[in-house]
Amino acid sequence: MNWIFIHGAGCTGAVFAAQTAALGGVAIDLPGHAAPGAPSSIRECSDAVFAELDARGLHDVILCGSSMGGAIAIECALRHDPRVRGIALLGSGAKLRVAPSIIQGIERDFENTARTAASYFFSEATPERVDAVVAMMRAVGAEQTARDYRACDAFDRTGDLEKIDVPVVAITGEHDVMTPPKFAHFIAERVPHGSVTIVPDAGHLVMIEQPGRTNDALRAFAAGIRP
Image (cartoon, rainbow, N blue to C red; front, top):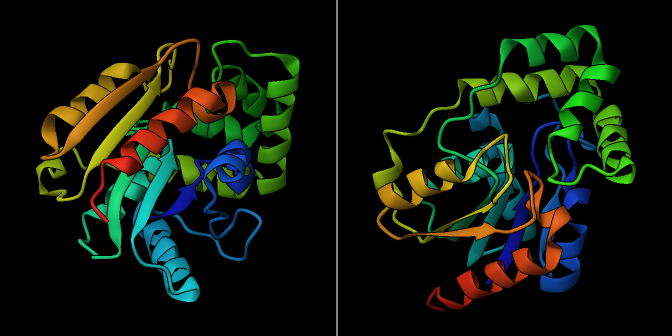
């Protein structure tokens, strides 16, 4: 199996450094995030993922998406491309509403809003973790980050989960306040082949805060997919 890691809003593939080091695979940078382009919808981002598979000639792929990246993975799975053998969702959901105040804050007061948002990404928001996320969002920029959040806010596949025909694991930090564990359970209860892993001592960016436990859950998921 080939891992493809898909980052979330305002981020880049760098959030998956611990996963690519342990599991291999590719952490892509979506268009507009350290790569040319300016996507404004989850569908456009899913097009970019398939373009990446085409360019790399990849088959037997597991898509692993964080937050918005999970929404993109869901969108990809609903296209029933045989190259996609499973999806792993990290701190994500089938519907990702974003408070208007966050989008407005990104557009009007980017630095402070990014720092406030980053403080909610961890169960233990150390200055080092928050600074690293803010630097990443700053590199992506306010315009693309706002497009990302608007794309998330428009995303709703709650009525289509039963159409996903590949295995799905929803992995969420027990202290995730952005996409709480109930989001993971909602997905797993509605897809035909779903499971849940709730990671202790972790918030929204579970793969950064608890990389070992996240990697163990991903390995176990991959092991259950038939070659």
